[in-house]
Amino acid sequence: MGVQIIMLIDDLAKKIENWLLEQVKNKGVKGFVIGLSGGIDSAVAAALCRNVCPKTTFGVIMPCYSNPEDAEHAELLAKSIGIEYKTVQLDKPFAEMVKLLTGEDYDPGKKDLAIANIKPRLRMTTLYYYAAKRESMVVGTGNRSELTVGYFTKHGDGGVDLLPIANLVKKQVIEMAKYLEIPAPIINKPPSAGLWEGQTDEKEMGITYEELDRYILTGQANDRVKTVVDDLAMKSMHKKQLPAMPPL
Image 1 (spheres, rainbow, N blue to C red):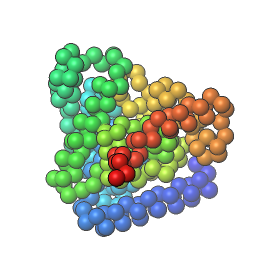
Image 2 (image 1 turned 90 degrees about the vertical axis):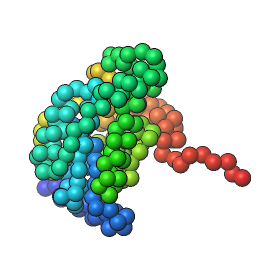
Image 3 (image 1 turned 30 degrees about the vertical axis):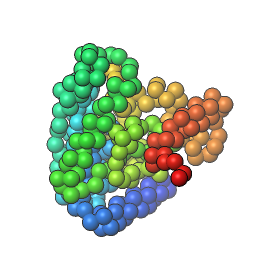
Image 4 (image 1 turned 180 degrees about the horizontal axis):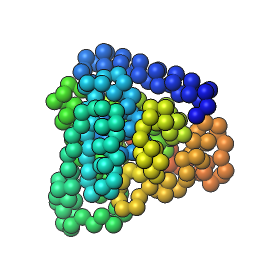
């Protein structure tokens, strides 16, 4: 990274950390609880939280019919930044929920979003359990790129108390990860929500993060990208709003 970029990222990191410290003080909590997916977003969010509350940032690794590499990377991250963590296996409760709802055994190769979204909702429940026990806040890992197009599960990974990297597009998250010395395997892996086998963010969205970030930051994109982004943003608007109420 060039000197100018390092200075910019350093300034962003300090602003986010100061904000996180204010949240802890204002909410009267002891620290943070964050789900560690093995991906870059949770790694950056966890490292920033660690810088603010080194002894009370708690990571939870929640495999759920996941690629084993994800849990390995999550553990690598927790150890590299020196935070307390716990692994909670969610395969069994997830499979039981799928069986209860569908009457069928879970098929990992099936691309069914209604089923896949049970995973992040189970994780949300798990995180709030630990947050309550530890008098902490649940930290979300959504970035500006994902939030713009609604690339998160309502009441799943969207069910959080704080979103520390919500103003960073994916490119900035990558720069922040390098600045925070996140392990290279985490930075270099293709972004994925782990919803089903072979799933990646860019395949599911139908555009690349580079295209998305450029459109967000400059307003410039070809017609296809503009259509995809604008359509996704419109359809996911409800995810970023409070429940609708009649104007009585």
